Structures are given as C-alpha cells and as structure tokens.
Image (tube, rainbow, N blue to C red; front, side, top):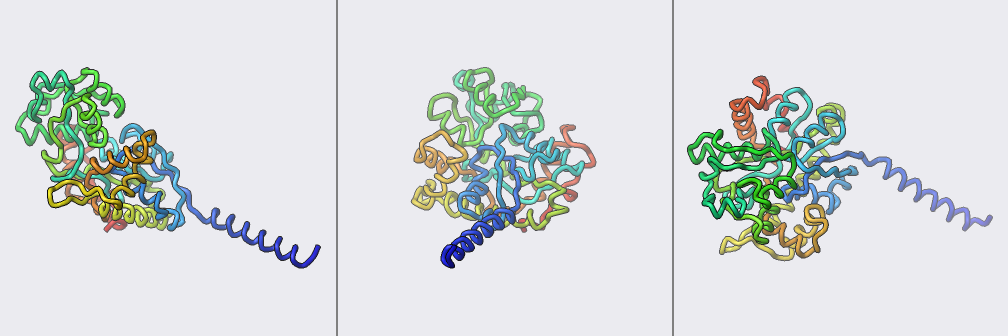
Length: 339
C-alpha cells in the first residue's frame, strides 16, 4: 500500500469521524404541533437551519387538536409543543406536567386570525352577526379549548349568557370542518387558513373575524418540566432558534401596504412557501404560499409572553369550573427564555 493510498484512507476516515461526531453532538427533540400558519416561526426555523445551527435535530409530531399535544408532553411522548392554551393544558401545568416558555399566535386587531363562520343553512336563516350565535349550535374541538374560550369572549362582548350557545365538542378540526360544511351545526370557529378557502369554495359564510371581538394570545410554546430542569441549555437553544423563525415570520408576513392589504412580495412568498410545506403539504407550492400570505395571524416576533393575558384566561376557566382553583400561572410560565 503506497503513501498516497494511506493518506487518502486516513482523510476519508477522518471525514467519516467528523460526520459521526457532528451527528452524535446534535440533541434530538420532539415537537407536537398542528398544521397551522401560526406555527410558522417553528417551520421557518426548521427550513432555514436555525435549529440545526443550535445543535438541535427536530422530530415534528402532527396532531389534530391542542389538548393531545399537552398530554403528549406531560406523558413524555414529546419534549415541546406549539399549540393553543386550553383548560386541560393549564390543569396539567398546574400539576407540574408542562411549562410555558414562549408565545405563539394571537388575535390582534387588523391581522388575520380565527374566523367565526356559519353553515350555509344557518347564514340563510339569519346567523350573520356574532351576537346571533346565542341560541345556535357551534362545533368546537373540546370543552375547555381555545374555541370554547373565544365563544366566551363573544358572549361577554355581546352581552349574553354563554349557556345560550349549544356547544358541540367533536374532538378534532376535521370534524369541525365537516360539521359546518354539512349543516350539522350552525357555526364554528376556525383559523383563517382553513376558514378562508372554505368560504371561497362556498362551503360556509363568514360571520366575523375573531380579532374584531377581542385581543387574545391563544398560543404558546410548551416544554417538558423535566427538560427545563435537567437540560435548560437545550430549551434555551430551542427558544433562540424559534425566535429567529418568529422574527423572519413577522418581517415577511405581517406587513401591509398603504391600502391595508397584505404585502405579497418575493420576501413574503419565500417565507410563505416554506411554511406551506407543512400547513398545506398536498397543495401546489404557489397555491399553498398564497393561502399562507392571505391568512397569516399575528405572532409576537420576539416570542414574548402575555402573562396578564394568561392569568385572565385562567380566571375565566376557573369561573367555568374547568381549571382547578390552585392553578397559578407564575408557577409554570417561565419568562426567562423569551424575554
């Protein structure tokens, strides 16, 4: 064996060792998530290599509702979760099963968010204003969900008793969609990236954007308390990468022109196409990107948490007997990562 062959073999072996060492160095974490545009900061972080640059390898686990994500974290089946704050997740957090470390989506005046939509039959019979959901049947995922909370916001804003709404817990988003499309319920609340195309296809009618009812930080980044306690640096690196994705999301998708229309330039289209890969995986890239641009909800570009807003949610859920009296946001909202 000549000297050149030996050196070539040594170099190849060194490269292989370096690759193996790099792969071994990456911390693998799993993330429970919905196929929502409001999770765009996470998707951009994956697509643009921000998590990889922090030495993190992500496994995305997709769910059909928020509560199962919280359960997955509490049971150890997921390290992180990016989804809505629910009564169930608050109860789990109160028992030490979850921590909240950054924000996700929010209702904010002037931005796309959840939409109150009516079935075609109900709209034809007069359900064309938010106050008219009093006496109507409304599909939600589960009792204690973000959709339940938003119905409470409608009742408070319009001055009627929430008990006048007949809530139909159907367990998942696909079931909510089917229920309103087939006139099994009068109305439902859905994210605009789902509601918008349904309205365009004539499958339902818009009653009101929920951002016209009240501001509301409905989404959060949850983390395993065990991970926070034992590998705080992993959580810090995750949040750092996520915040870079959030900053890109805001810079690309939360801009309006002089007429108030959403800006759809190359910067927006690039970010939207990357997010659409996860939200609309079966759509042609350009169509998915257009839907993302049209429906991108507000997300704080720094991941900042609205602690007062979370405490308000807890108080409301307690008033509805859905959250235990001993649940205290200060025990599980960790402001040390996103602030």
